Image 1 (cartoon, helix red, strand yellow):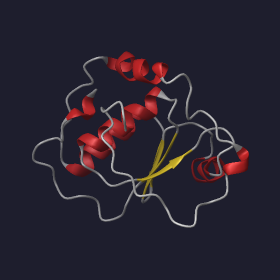
Image 2 (spheres, helix red, strand yellow):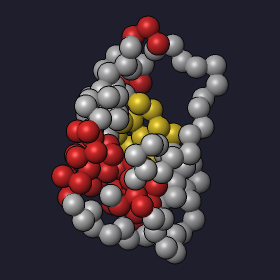
Image 3 (cartoon, helix red, strand yellow):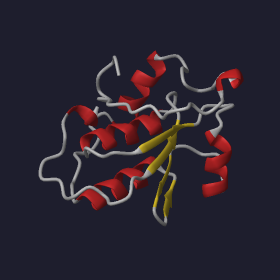
Image 4 (cartoon, helix red, strand yellow):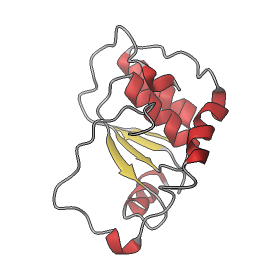
Length: 142
């Protein structure tokens, strides 16, 4: 995927941290996560599998239950291509076109057999402390 290397000559990071509402089993969300890695961005990721406490928040902010959803200041974006373009512009970078297209993001997602598509309702209480995760989207172990 496109998240294997950080884009060269990046501009400054945004002053405020964008929020990405997404879920693991979505290939379009994966495409955005790969762009976040390639652009070396810090993002607040809110997993929105079915039964997630974040779904209602996403619906209130954007008006529909569609993912990925990026909220960055006044920008509210849904389509993965629009989100990747927006993030690239704000970082002053041009990402290489996704070599495998949607299929390249769909295959790893399919191999995970829907994991992350829903949340166990019993585990939906917010944690006492947020998890700070350093990931590398193209690594099968992250």
